[in-house]
Length: 525
Image (cartoon, rainbow, N blue to C red; front, side):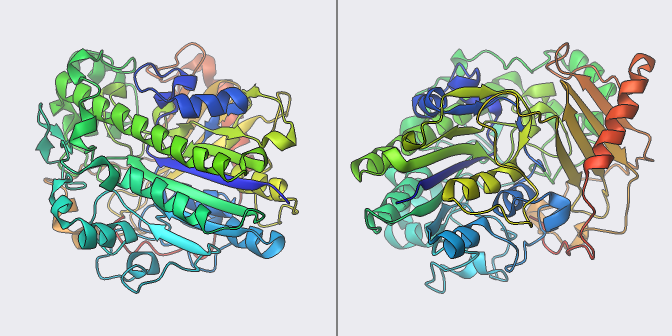
């Protein structure tokens, strides 16, 4: 019998959300135990800072520019390479994805894409190499399996969720997308994902080999955990996060040293609706609202950790624990108060790029506990799964198996951003190497992307969008050893000109060619 793989992902979770990564609020003993018994990657980065590109990298093992899902709203073609399909075909693995997939646009109430209509067609797959898929999103709209399950079995719970991407004020403080959800915990999507994962595992025979992707929609906004759990952390007791600069004057001074869309978003001139509600203006966020948002996120992180514990306990009960590898990571981070901002978007800083990434190897593999400081990426996950399954890493994967000890010689990790809206046309390329992060702003375009005029009314910007055009000379450079908060942009500092040139050359030397022709951007998210 071979080794099994439990691949756990969250959505929009910061590196420091976990106790093992310095988190001090949310209690995450299950994830911490995995790190203490396994390998904790201290410099894991995504290859894109929003959902669909990052998730497409995880399933394909490819750079964003290779698989082609360069932004939300770009559907990953159904015949794209899939590590799940490869493990099934080459190693006989049973495969499942339970929870959030999001390889196809989610705002698709007509069911144009199969992910969004498969439950309505009473289908659980196979699809994309998964024998079974049972899907969920953040709110119970659309045709996902969780939505239909809740509609059928607990319709009284449908109205308790906060509307997604509306920016609607709620909670005690009027914070955006915060709500104390009256839903019982066992009906909330976190516990539903864990329950469906356990049910799938219970359908397998003890000798089966399996690859199971358990994908939680939280702690992504809206922040609306079950109200009976939400008060376990009192927002009034929280300090402001370390990355929050403090006064508006200090925030604006820091943002003024960065490319223009940073300050323009904060002050309400730039609509960052690629990363959050179109109506959200960061300078209007109060400190108490930030505390309440953070409290809700910490609660959601605790609920995820407890759900993981239940699944791992079931794996142990079935006798699989000695030969089961467990991975824990996320697709991207959350600003969560850093720089006075919330949500995500075209902002290449640690809050969004740096990920929790833990691998607890199967005890039977006898791989020692370690912490790895060398940079790794999401595209390294699929090759690692292949190595565990004992099959060759296919040529279409661009990552390498994750190192199990320091001294791998890895030097860099690359992250990209391309706007999904033609009217914004922003293109960022980042490299992390030797304790520095450099981001190049390529020349803005207006000829590729979705037309803002076609997006649903609740996503539409509430006012004019600043016409920000970068000419290719702008950028960001941070010395993370001296400036871990990334408050001081060194891009124009003459003392760093040589390093900037070297990092820029290294970045472009290691970027693969772009997919041609480009995939269409034909949905808003």
